[in-house]
Image (cartoon, rainbow over all chains, first blue to last red; front, side):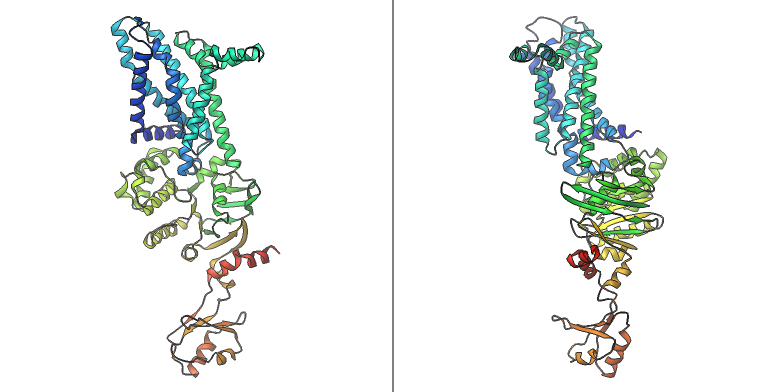
Length: 244
Length: 313
């Protein structure tokens, strides 16, 4: 077994030996339900799709993903196990990927547990299941991007609270970057090209494109690159910490 | 084998490890000795690859920790200070995790697992969470983790710190048993440990190498080396008469228990003359002892100002 797999399995197991994972799953499912049915007017819209469900995901992840990612490295640092882990024969990249994949799979599980909603929609009407599948894919990719940001920021501090707040902050900026209110605010103050660039950085824009069922390679690439860049930055921080 | 070559680590202006060059060979138990904050743990962390050296380097079994970190880490079993482990895991899960990360194949891993668990007597706690274990057991789990892959080089940062005397004894026996074909580097600030375990000692303070010798050689540096001490309760042993012996340099009397210590002139044996004198005088001596030298005194001398200054001069 590769070291990455070993780390991933250890991490995944550690989620479920404490009640944290179950608490998280319950909160995730309850919030997802509430947001969909009340805020999203699931029934009142009279349409057989999961659009209101997915629309709420960025805001749901804003709170819940940092809660998963904050412990990834901060906890190891605080508990002294970082020294143990990093003196085992594995590279920083392998350790980072192992941790990331474990957390990403866990979020994938949380997402998969919302399947009853999908079944409900299919019972009530005949939705376009391709679009719904794309929505799930987009949602999982977005969760991965948030997670990668959190994994990187978790290396910066031994305090999980600080890691949580920093992650939530960056994520909210990335969500809001494409909102017209934000872009309008900078209209005139910044050159048009820069504003367009900022708009392209927006998570929301890429997520909504995928969730509409349009699988554009650029949107997928956006998420994959975001994930890789933040994970690489995290590895860099870990390496810098060895020399500091 | 462990070698360090001008190994240096700075934190801002503070130099934690200063151009340290040491060497430990197979079959050797090298004790890294020094006061708290001397740089022992920092040096070990660099050898283990957790910290990067500011300059200089270290080699484990010939693998440079900067150029071939993974090979160096594979050859090394390391017990970090305080024996950290994942508290929410059971002992079995933890050791299986270590075996997997170290890439032990199933059959080898299983054999090693059985052997290590037996050797450290962990059979009864295999299914317990590490969090629930006593300090001594946790230390043993840390040791198990370090020797699981049967490494040629073992590095243990204060392996007996915080253990009770029985546990200390057990850990020392284990280290002793493993010492024959391996290179072992242990750090400690316990001098008794040096006697019990090490066949070579490196003393560092403020990051610098101050002494590199066998325990016996260190003892010879003590002013107590070759001194004779005895208790003669209720008798007025004449210090004057002892002082008249040509071999005697000085005499001290312990103000608490009245024990008399006679110091020889350099390179002279005084046990026989002192005994002879005592017999001639017909003095009752309850017990008489030839001192080998006191490591604590040598340690203090070397690591506090006097010795350190002497050495750098």
